[in-house]
Length: 116
Image (cartoon, rainbow, N blue to C red; front, side, top):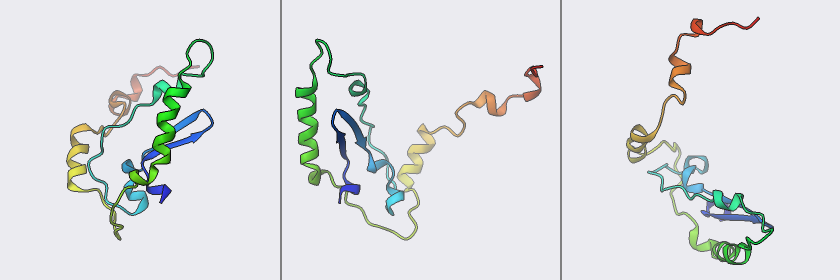
């Protein structure tokens, strides 16, 4: 059941979020509208040295989340053809970007100078 739990993965002081709710088709589920992503960047900038002793408070809550991972197991039906739902496609058309660098893809490559 762990592969279906939206929880934290902890390895000593390294913490990674396991966002299975964003990749349901990989597990045979239908992708619905995604929830807001959890931003844990602040955890990556900490090392526990110096005056910033945040480990005991922050890691305690994340260890409790891990201990209760059974409460965070996603329930979904496995289908033969896990296409995105209409709800997800509506969301994607509003928020997704077909091209990340529009100028690079649609620009005229002849305008760039060719180095010697």
